[in-house]
Image 1 (cartoon, rainbow, N blue to C red):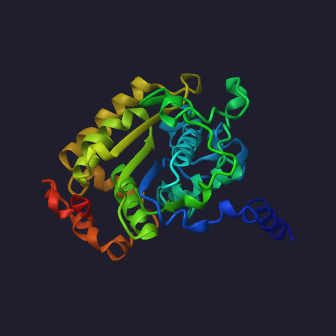
Image 2 (tube, one colour):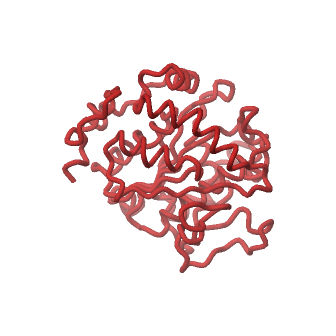
Amino acid sequence: MPCIRASSFYLTRFAVRPNRRQNDRSVATRATHLVVVAGHSVLVSGDLANAGRSDSVWYLYDYQRHRGLPRAIVSHVQAGVRIAAEDERALLVFSGGETRALTGPNSEGGSYFRVADALDLWDGRDAFAKEDGGDGRRSETTSAAAAAGGDEADGDGGATPPPRSTVRARTVTEEYATDSFENLLFSICRFREITGSYPRKISLVSFSFKRLRFETLHAEALRWPLDRFDYVGVDPPASTGFDLEESSEGERNNSLQPFREDPYGCHTEVLQRKRRERNPFARKAPYELTCPEMRELLLWCGPELIPEGNVPWSKM
């Protein structure tokens, strides 16, 4: 009986609102703009009301605890929703696979979608408004980038979409990525699966200290043009325990250098080990079949970069 009541509640809350049904009025399939939110963890608790505040809701490594990661995750979700709300031709993708062995086969992308549902973020609600002294809404005239403080944001970042936002109907998950390179690569393919074409523009949401990794390493390795790539860095407030300087140092040592040496993550032991550890359920992405134009890129290992003319978007 409890399961029936839970299902009934879900249907009452979402299904009766047509603008929230997946691809309602083909809003997803006609997208031209890919908005990616890169995942960082998996839910381990049903206490989703505290998903933005409590470490216990997420599976966190010791180095991630007391660093504001719950706030960062929900802020990234909010930023992605608000960017997508400003462009009716945007498809929002929450990307991240089944990366934690102890949580069971639950994905980062699916966890983010569940949080957006549970906190009802689709219409622009600010989950941190009360503690930040706001009323839960943002000015509709303020762009996501401006509200986020420009290129980087300290907080949730973004403008409130219209009350009948179609963002939920234009949101999907990507559930195979095990690292940041795959977040971007696989999300492009997920876009192709939904729309039948490749995006004309990409916006990506993550931490501010990862900007260099995505812009100068991942986008370059994919031969994606930077004039069609927008990076939105969103960090939690320092009051949560987040330390930008410490995080930036870890980024330089643990991510930037390995990806400089191995742009596709195929050769260096540190990147290969991370992918093995973050794929405990031995999932195999299907994208060679569903995105045949990307097959060469999906299999490319470098370390030299793939020729520019060998990726589908070189002809766009």
